[in-house]
Length: 398
Ligand code: AOF
Ligand code: ZN
Image 1 (cartoon, rainbow, N blue to C red):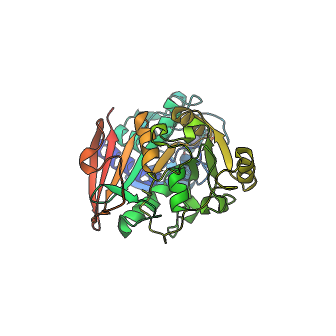
Image 2 (image 1 turned 90 degrees about the vertical axis):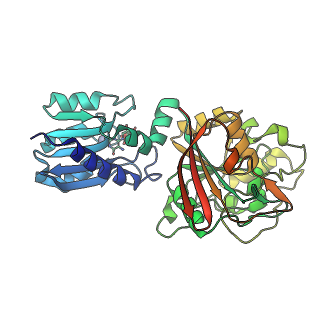
Image 3 (image 1 turned 180 degrees about the horizontal axis):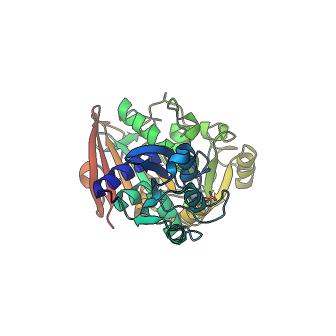
């Protein structure tokens, strides 16, 4: 029986919704959704497991059992055909007796890359490709970016006061946005592989950059600090928690976010907070081994605290290094120098702009841009009200 197209779209939409569930949780593996449908009834559903395995299809087939026979499997990504850490999903689909497989997008992983489709067809299974392709590309955009461009998908997040400021000079974290926006940021962090700030933000705000929302506590991303001179204070929350949640400090020239803004020997006060997360104000912490402390000594102290030091000469090299260790999505959370560094080299794919209702006024640290001055080349995709805040999502053109 030929199924109406809208039915395919409905079930693929369900698979896509399911796939979102484990975003940021599947390591180097994409979070894939799979729904098995027999005579209009969902008989199995699954998302790639936490840690990346088992894959979605094998779990959904296990749930469907005998009901998979003659059924249609909706999968957001082409089923894998390789013997990796688990046997190929194509084998499991063929063995289950499904009659048809519907796929949103092909898998660019060179071990798969169309072979999954060929194997299914050779086994007599009908395969349709491209159902909700655009939505599939969006859901898997971070994975596709790493596979195809060998870099993570980069999101720049800014919380800006209604007078265009991201913080106040000399103060730590200043409340700019409300509770709903802050909750959104927690969810965003949970869905992201890595989160990055500059040393100015790290030392002025003393953020922890972990996920602190009930139920999502185990989903903290890898934390990254641009810190060319290794000034990150040993007593900072970031370093103190390095044993539990990975912390990478970027030395080398990539760790110096915006050379034109840097004054030798001066802390980058322009890097106020943009995290929008409200914590008690903390005094500026002193750098490891004192301000004039020697670089090697500071490096040794950080390494023995469990911090990884990564040398990269520029932002593209940094992104390539992150991709090669399996990081598919990166959230740039502050401050203005880090934001500018990524914008300058045109390596921002998406901007999430939270605008609070109140001004910061005197002593404010200007945001690199605000609502009406978003850099050229970005298009507004979505807008929402979160309490008193205005949220906007922009995507880079092409
Ligand atoms: C699927 N279903 O749910 C996912 C797939 O390291 P391995 O052996 O787990 O293989 C990782 C690759 O498997 C990954 O690069 C991508 O090609 C595919 N992911 N495939 O059939 C899934 N997550
Ligand atoms: Zn698989």
